Structure formats: C-alpha cells, structure tokens
Image 1 (cartoon, helix red, strand yellow):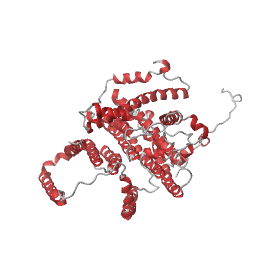
Image 2 (cartoon, rainbow over the protein chains, first blue to last red):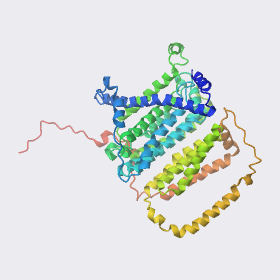
Image 3 (cartoon, chains in turn green, blue):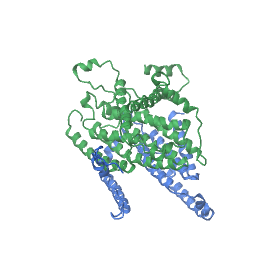
Image 4 (cartoon, rainbow over the protein chains, first blue to last red):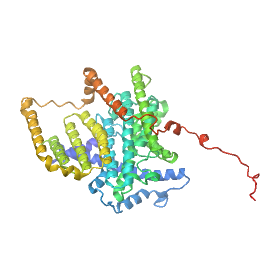
Length: 355
Length: 204
C-alpha cells in the first residue's frame, strides 16, 4: 500500500523532481507517526491519573466524558488558552527556546524507532547511536529553562537535573554497548531481528542485570519518580517548570511523556524482542496467535513498561540527590562494565540460543 | 540543482552564520547555544559526506556531554560584562594584529592549491548497504590498535590526576556513608515499646 502511494505521488504530481517528492513523503510519514504519538501521550496522562488514583484508593478523573475519557482534551484546551507569562528580566529568546529544545529531540528520536517488520520512517544504519545522541540533546531544554527563568528554584532544579542526566547517560550508553555486542549490530531493526523466535531468545535472559539497570536509568533519564529531582515539589516547588505557564509548560510536559513512551519502546526493542511474538516456535500457540499484527505485540509490551512507570511512581519515595549519584557512579557503572566482559565471554563461547 | 546540494548550501549557511554570530555574541550562554547550532550544521554536512558515525559521535560527545559541562561552568560563573569590555580599546590593536596573522597563516596553508584539489577526483559514492561503522571499527581495532589504546590510557591518566587534585583527606571531609544509609532497616531506627494502657498512674 505504501509503495503504491509513493508511485502515485511520483506519477500524478509531475512537477516534483526527486527532491521535493522525497521531502513530501517524509513529511506525510512524519505526520502519520506523530499524530498517534500525541494521542498516546495524551492518554498516558489520563492513565497516570487513573492508575495512581486507584492505587491510592481514589477514583481519579471521572467528570469530563464517560469515565473521564475526555479529560486529556480538556487539559489541552485549558493549557492552550492560558496566558504565557514572561518573568521580569528573563531572557525572552532563551525562555521560549527552552521548551522547544526539550520537545523537538523527543519527537526527532521517533524517526528511527521501528514499530514492526518494515514499519519505520528511516532504517538508519546506526539508529541506536542516533537515539542516544538525540536523546542527549533534550538536556538543553532543562538547562536553558533553568537559566532563562531568572529565578532561584529553576536554576537549582536545572543544575541537579543536568548533572543527573549526564551521569545516567553514561550508564545507558554502556548498557547499549552490551546489547550491541550481543546483536553485533547498531541498527535497531537488526537488533530486533536477532532476537527472533520465542520468549527465550530475547536478550532479557543473558542481559538480565543490564535490563534492570537500563530500566532504572530510563526512570532517571526521563526525570520520573523516584528520580524526579528536576521538579521535586517538596524541595524546590516545581524546579525548572516554576516560571512556565500555558503552552510553554505543555511542551515540557509533552516532551516528558513522549520520552517515557520512547524509553518503553527502547526497552522492548533492546531486551524484549521488539515486535516478535513471545510464542514463536511454540507448536499450537504460534498458529493460534498468528492473526495478531506485529505492531500489536510491540504496543502490548510497551504498555506494560508504561504501566511500570506509573506503578513505580506510586510506590517509591523520592531518592536523595547524592544517593542517586552514588547509585549511578558506584553501583551501575561498575556493574555495566563488568557485564560487558561477561557478554564478551558469552559471545565468544556462542552460548545458548542468543549468540 | 540537485537536492543534496540544496541541503549542502542550507547547512553550510547555518554553519557559517552561527559561527560568525558566536564570535559576535555578547551573552555567553547565547554564544554557547550558537556553538551547538554550528556543531549540528557540521554534523549534517558530514552526514551528506556519508560519514554518519562521525556525525553522530560529534553530537553524542560534544553536544551531549562537553557543551553541557560548558553551560554548567557558564551558569556557575558570575560573568561581569563591564569588566570584560573595560580594556577593549587598549587591546584592540594587538587583537587586530594577531587575528590578521592567523588569517594570513590559514590562507597560506589551507588554500586549495596546497592540496591539489583540482587534480583529485570526487570520491566514489558507496552502495546503500555500506556500513561506515564496521570499516572504522576494523581499522581502529587492528591497524591502529596501539595508538587507540594509548589515547585511552592518556584519558585515564587525565581522569586520575583530576581526581587526585580535588581529593581531600578523611579528617577534613564530612562524608556520609550512603550505603549504610540506604541499607537501614526500620528495626534500626524505630523501637516499638508495648506499654499497657491501664496501669498508668493518674497525675495528682
């Protein structure tokens, strides 16, 4: 169907030379991915309020629409019509640039995330490195927001959060190295296809400690509880978001949730076999679940991890800042470096079904 | 004009413009952001030259880590613009002289004639499945493995020396034992005393 559409564009829109048609096709592909992503993000906020509500024996939003289903749209319209207030003596250019710099990388990462067999925007040869590189750009949103607000609490939040993000990026990078060693490829498509065939072929078994480390680092990278030092309401009353209102704040908010969805997708792609069915190679179950499209497996696994985000937020109290840093530098970093050696040994021995 | 050459001119213009504005900018933080923009433009130019690993590494290392630390330092320092600009006219002749010398040297060395650019052909384009990263890795870990390892050791020495410089003796530091704090149990801190409610004496 896709190829047919591309042929249609080339055939009936003759005044496009090759370049403009390429741009148009990329644009349409991008919109087709970003719109569902935004809706997913909107309902992630709804799910968060509902799930945490029930965990705390409350009901959660239930007034707008049936069982509160229209609540995200009500929130969006509220934020859109709110005034954006610029603090006095704040640097207006950087103040406006900050939420954009947080939001754009969060969206840009999705260009290389494969959602199914041959279902992606670009099949970049170094897509995992691209994800890490563009993901690290999101820090500037927080740093600039802290500086441009011309206020004490945002600056404190930005300082804490930037050092936290830089530290945990090292750990995430090392975890990615173990996955790359196991799959012997930096291409996310090839990493997933090297995990084909049943739940026991996925990398969560040989890389189990790395999976745990990655998930805890993912919580820190997305500034979620229990590592939400950038906001820390009880300590610095909202951190970098204090001076932001209206759509400027909404962009930060959306960037955080889209990053959460991205981290869940990355965890599934790297450790849980991506779009592969867990029943591949099982005699009867494989045929029974053959009708399920591969993107549904990916989305199903992702929803579990997104639920995990909410579950952890409702369960754990916030870490103290120096304890977060100790966890990163003294626990995770030695563990990941040691596991790189283990993975090197396992790949040399061609262990099990994985290598 | 080909599509890739349009891209080349767009990114090239971005690079030159952001570099020029970076030199002129008065606000240090703005200058740092313009430097990031020029890094991105260079990375895009490298992508057009099929050097995708180098481009991503530039963003990952310089934009993702080095510039963040730069911004950290900039935010910590209280830069007073007036003291910086106070002796501007005094140093202006010297500055102009030094920059002219630098420009002349670069023009001598980097002019196209020095490299025989007219005689060198355009490098051949690689096929779609060509993996840049595999080529780079096989060169780096076989032919150039000793220089590579030496560079790594040099960085390790730099890290250790930096830590040694800021290391304090135990007696002066107010260090907390975090692993003890994290592994604390409720029984270490809370003692539940069972006091019967009936036998207490009434105050007179």
